[in-house]
View 1 (cartoon, one colour):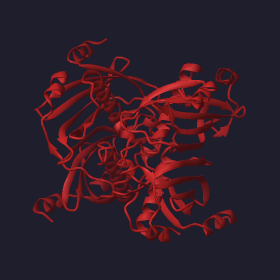
View 2 (tube, each protein chain N blue to C red):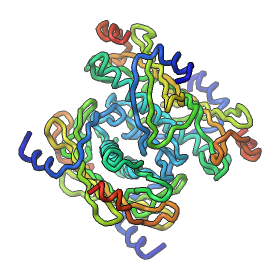
View 3 (tube, rainbow over the protein chains, first blue to last red):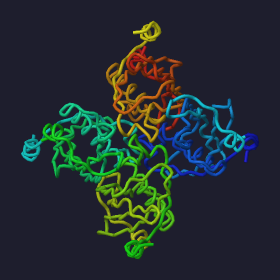
View 4 (tube, each protein chain N blue to C red):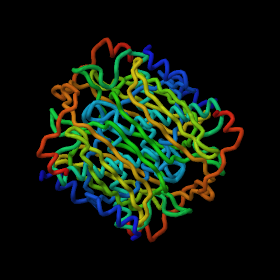
Length: 140
Length: 140
Length: 140
Length: 140
């Protein structure tokens, strides 16, 4: 593993394995750019289930996580059948907002990086709310 | 236009134009098989809006149309940028159930056929209900 | 487990576990009807990888499996976070065509059934070809 | 129309109309965050077809446009049936790279903004190439 990957790995909270499926690809023979967000979403959902133990992003009738920003940079294309390792680092930006940094590695090479930012809301009034402490403490 | 297409056209209620987008395709260089359901869905939604003038498939708090069956047969693949003509024929199977027959034509050639069947429900109790007469009469 | 499920299980070749993701759902609060084809596709791809050990559906430059028919019947809706068990039974219809019967079970209850039929082709000439014996023998 | 929208409109090159479809939504009752990239993609493809008159993003065997970056900020959610106006401003970053700035307006209100950056490549060698002058001149 390269030195740069070792540095990346040091701050990583969670590692997820995924495979590029036929429906992820497009006629350019590579994963469609929006499909990488499927890989990101799967990683976050599995992380939250395992680490925090709550349904996600619909936690309950009074707590949802909604997306406020998405970003991805595509360094190398990934292809049908490629085995991906997705590295997740959550960052608590405020009592209401979490940012997830994500990196996609294939055979030791960084192919894609990006982030997703979500805000906690009460869906009944569609307003930002504080993330409960028992959730925040497990994310930190 | 071929004789068979003329016969097909005779029973058709609605015609919709669509283009195969990059996200509809997969690494086989053709539209992914599930993408044809996107073409079908677009056709039905536009038909209902124009012909019946209601939101669809969520009409209101007490009337939703939910899918009970989907079927497609793929005769010829369609490709990125292909201009498709989608022919829709609705059939009222009962006071609660509508079946939509769909055919996809490209340059006068039948490429795909299929159908979608939807039942009217009251989402509060998730039970089948009669489709209101003012909707049924516009569909017939 | 009910008697009907025991009968279903007897002919099953492969069992796959899947979770309903946020992107599988739609505004009706249930999995979108076309998302079930994602569950079907995942099951078939994993089955072929494990049982036959080949890339799929693009096996190599001279052998692809392309979809010729898809069908699903939706008995009960599935929701965000539901854990699904997908049962797969492949049927060799001819030396060129395989049909995959699929059933989706949630908590011991049959929610969805359907099938996908694929034909082997040589993509260079886009004509049906015989599935090689070493693949057919592992599927049977 | 508000003052801020008038300023936004001044630099806009292309306007596209779109409707939020059932398959764009998720169980939060709003468009899924990755669906906005569908709206962005549709706008760019239609713009290129109309303004430049070439297939896109697969122009020919020696010229493809591939995605190198995607970004979206979600200010207000959009819902099933919402009529969206998507405003596109292309920026030529170099002889090889185009950035598309996109804004989604609903009823005069800015709901979403983002951008997509694409690089021209020769797919046979998967290397960046200069965008032909006849294309660049029509984009400017």
